[in-house]
Amino acid sequence: LQLAPDDPVALMRQGTLSLRVGDFSNAIPSLTRALSLTNAYPARLGRAFAFFNTGHLDEAEADYQALLQAFPADPQAWMGLAEIACQRRDTNAAIRYYQRCLSQVPAGSEEAQVVAARLKTLKQVLR
Image 1 (cartoon, rainbow, N blue to C red):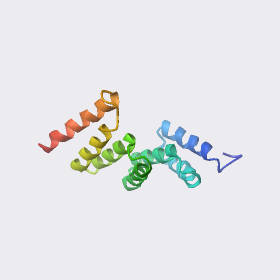
Image 2 (image 1 turned 90 degrees about the vertical axis):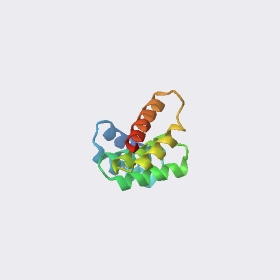
Image 3 (image 1 turned 60 degrees about the vertical axis):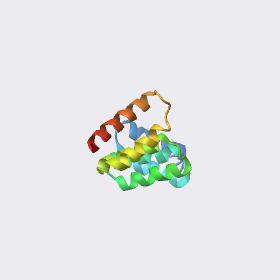
Image 4 (image 1 turned 90 degrees about the horizontal axis):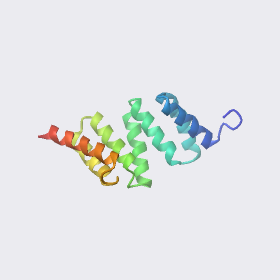
């Protein structure tokens, strides 16, 4: 980055490294800069995750919604929106988002099992 501060790949790698070590607040500037140069899926998803983990739910939601505009079947974006709805204690929205996520993942996969368990728990809350 010292040699090429506007290299989107290097910026995404820096942001991804910050995400992997749990340094979410430091991931945001790198990923935001990468997104200003290119609308790369990994940068948008990573920044949404970083925003969520730093409590910036509105910003995370905006990134997940942007992902869904480009990739309507993206299970990670549906999962992210479901988690935001859970944080906001909007059980009905969370259920809708988890159901959309579940419809996009392979049946029987580990991800499907996790989502199904979350759905079951949320539906029990409504009873």
